[in-house]
Amino acid sequence: MNLNSMLDELTKLSRISLFTLIPLTAAFILTSYLSNSLTILSLALDSGVSIVVQAFAFNTIRAMKSADSIRFPHGTGKLENFSGFLYGALNIPVALYIIFHSIADLPAPAPTAFTIAQLPMIPSLIRSVYLYWFATRLSRQFESPLIESYVVDFRVAVGFDSIVILAMAAGMISNMAGIDGFAHYIDPVFSLCIGLYMLRAAVLLLMNNFKILIDLPMPENEQLEIIRVLASEFDSYEQIGTIRTRRSGSQRFVEIELYFLSTADVTAIASLSSRIREKLREKFNDLKLGILVLEYETAEESSQAA
Image 1 (spheres, rainbow, N blue to C red):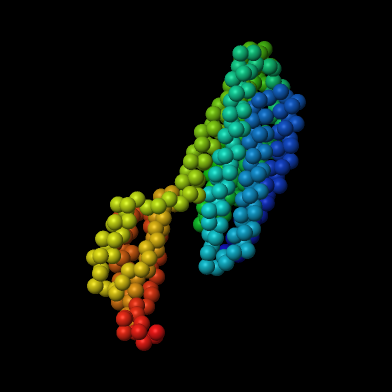
Image 2: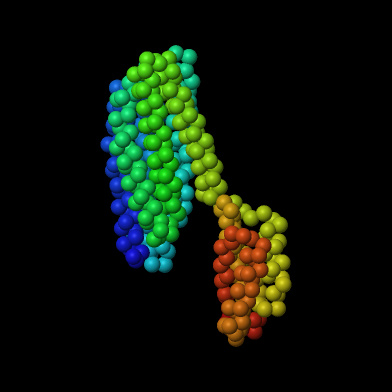
């Protein structure tokens, strides 16, 4: 399957994910009101945040399709990281809200209509299973960080929906067995666990993606390593131009300008570039290196040009 058809499939996955989430969120909101379930309210709030992020991801894929997909098959760049950062930033206040209300309800939990609470969970589980299968199938054919994030999200969603259904079923069975005291605590305790999980996941997403989104200077000792490598090859070029370096997450980006005489052998230049690249990659695990070859003008050539 070629790249364009893969992008079409990725667009389809994103579209289904977004437009099935909207009615599901509405169902969660209605059910949380009718059942008085904090757990379902937690899922409604999380789904509301997800709609915003899914909409951003959908537009990210559209941008990816309109880019030069032949040369840059993963052309979304930091848009993918911003999706994760946005989800984390929006979910932190949501998680804190859920945790606060769950703890407030623990001393005297209100009864929950577990039968009603389960109603939106069945379509939610079916949706999660289908989208997980869809994303997994794509991940086997197309290498993309965005697809991998979908695989992880939907895998978690399948497990999450299954556990919520089991918890609601346990509450319903407890009510039927007359163990109302135990049943009343299931909902606030479970919503508290959801809130804590959301908070942890949101903080990790925020921190990890922030490091990638923000470019930082390379440490001085790492910049010295670059100079040492260039010094070891000083007789292979005429002059060093500008050296640009930056760090984004674990990645190091280095761009070096090297000047050569107009009579320099092209093969020798290519060999030098390979040696510099190999030496630097021995020192930096995750390195993106660009070497710009420029023509060096001697004093005589400069005066003649003047």
